Image (cartoon, rainbow, N blue to C red; front, side, top):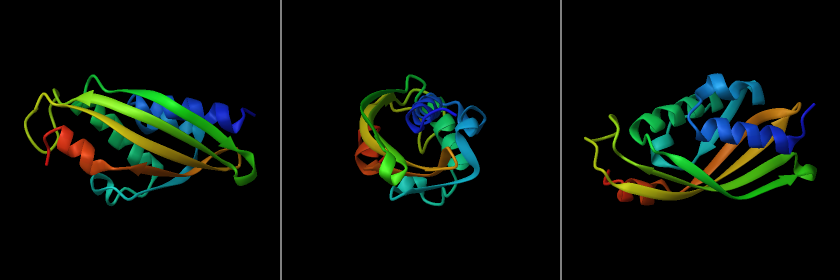
Length: 138
């Protein structure tokens, strides 16, 4: 069985490159849950819905990419924490308005809680308001 760290790294890359649930589900329990205190993600309660939301975001920000700044495994608490910076430009269709051509560089943290060797819950810590302003959506 892969380590928590290897599973989390593979999930993180699949999620952040817009693979959606199809590309992420192998790393998660079937009913994995999701939480975030960020307005764009209100109502998103499953990891399946979140990974598909990220897939859609890559249509709106087609040059979207991430940089990992920290990746830490906490064996005692059975979780992995990843800190990254997501960058992208609103040039694709979708979003709350026509493409603005504006860019964001948005800091965020994922805390991936493991259950039976797979991700059972993930919390995203993100100041969505800053990203939305940078993109010209607010």
